[in-house]
Image (tube, rainbow, N blue to C red; front, side, top):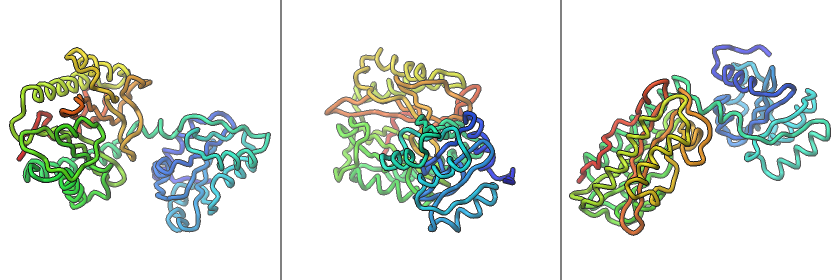
Length: 365
């Protein structure tokens, strides 16, 4: 098929094709992976990729949207609601040696269809998502889209939390106000439901906002993000609604110090597990090791949680173009929690910090 080199799908498909073993086809069923590869947003779509060509499979509802995408990329468009069955038929038709599928992206029904459709002559190989590896390294355009989403989210925070103040409002009211402020600035959605958690509620890392009034002289954990042009942002700040006691101040300073130490380690080639370990060791050295129970960070892109992962179970090294969060936290059950989160771009030198807000315990009304 004739391809149009200017279309971004061509470059992305070529990168995926370079990862394929000889004689293999890849079946991409994750809808975010499909969007990244082709630009197609669909609730029912797949891409079959071979060494020299590719096919988009979707149903009638998306035909008019998918047709120009396929034409621009010079790839085949197949209209068939039964994606997996059709993919197996393609593999048989081209005489593929194997069909690669993501082990966590097929259902039992899909497995039955593949077993029946491929027969004994084509191996079905379940493995990691190949596209997720490619998505982890952002292009300059993707980086600027994520930077724009973060700038939008920063502005919403300044308006709602810093300028207006949150004391006396409920956690849910603040969460809603943040979402409205982001959408009014052009966000197509929120990256996730905002977290607003005051006092002891902040000791729950993924707390759900309540109809509970935010008191004066307390810490409030706020975690929010905007989605813009499909790309997400992610940020956390822990603010003070007045005078806080020495313990709260100390814990906030420990978390900030852990983040600074981790940021100093973030560069292309850094070990993902090792970066996490730097922050974790500092927090443990201050006596709070048992109260930092989640990973240091994760990749952000079309999804708010993607690779790479900075955690004790993290693998591999950071690469230039990765965008990751750096979000150490300390959570004291029944008392309070502190988390501070930056969104950064990995480079060959120092990371580029996309978050534009102060890291200290911002005093708000």
